[in-house]
Image 1: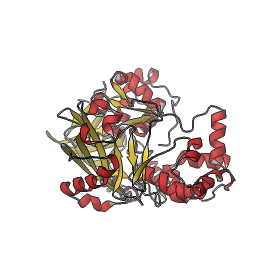
Image 2 (image 1 turned 90 degrees about the vertical axis):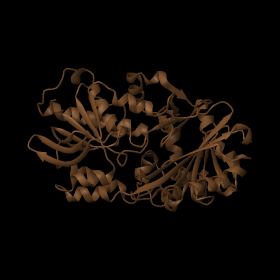
Image 3 (image 1 turned 30 degrees about the vertical axis):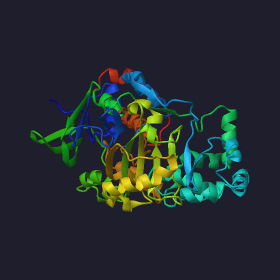
Image 4 (image 1 turned 180 degrees about the horizontal axis):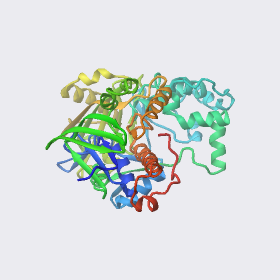
Length: 478
């Protein structure tokens, strides 16, 4: 078997997305993954009529790259959309009860979520001077523009929940790049959003919320099965070396040690794993990657007989502010989002424990997790019986934390990578943690690799020139 043009080390959604876009262009690529099957943390479990996800449970999309990939793979036919309008209720816990989160500025004024003083502070946003400090945290940015109350009751749980992060430490530039850009251009979030609406531009588009009939593992299967992508399980890279014509990769495989050469290598590994491979030839880049922090997360799936849950469960679920309960960051009403995830007459909820604000929960055993969740959930959604089934997934390094001067760290990583032509890093610590972001970043990276191969004079298949348009179908910060 001949050496490929590109080797991707790591078979999670980041690496597979790069590989899929390259294969779509007719560029052969080989993917090494040390696990028994690709997908990383994305895995779907089917048991007893229930369908649960080990990590991410759905996709929220507004990127054309994602739409194009779904159409090209035929996954559009397998999509399962969240029922109801895009504005289906989302809740936050406040004072021991669930309060709907207003999704439009006008609704915020009428909502009981904020006090009169908090609402007046939000309405004063257009008169707040533009910020001058690029290194602001999320908390500093939101409090400066919209006030402390909105930060604590809405923004903090949104950062602590889906991102498992701490707004007091997270970089506003890294976590809220669109809002920071609007402020810098228009000096006001309200004015910027108004201008974009008048001009019919996209600022915060309505998301498509969906999964697939057989879960998110369907996406992984489709990416890994693309013609031109050779995925090798139980291939653990142990050594990476630069050569005159590219890179040499050595690893342990079921058949023994194996060495390959390629013009381009994509490291799609957790930061510490990539750092280990880089140590022999770039200790500065190794240090930058090893300094990236991760949050642990425990995902608990609870199945109930529907007759024992006396809340209507209409909506997506709820998020939890730090002041209400630091250990529980959120709960999704999965069987309301996607009725096919549970048998008729049953309710399925997925709860998230830990994150940056409660790392101690990684030490909780199963019994403590379940007992704590039932103590919190029973009065909120009126549960009168124990769960019939429970599944628990633990992630020691669930999500990277965009804490501190994170844009500076990413800039330094990019500068070091520039010294090593053909070496790339594709992982959720660059460009966003969602599946949507990973697919979009995969497109951008594949586009760059294709251009580099063309510029180097490497012979490319004709398909590389006709099926991979060089104009971007969507912006990327990867």
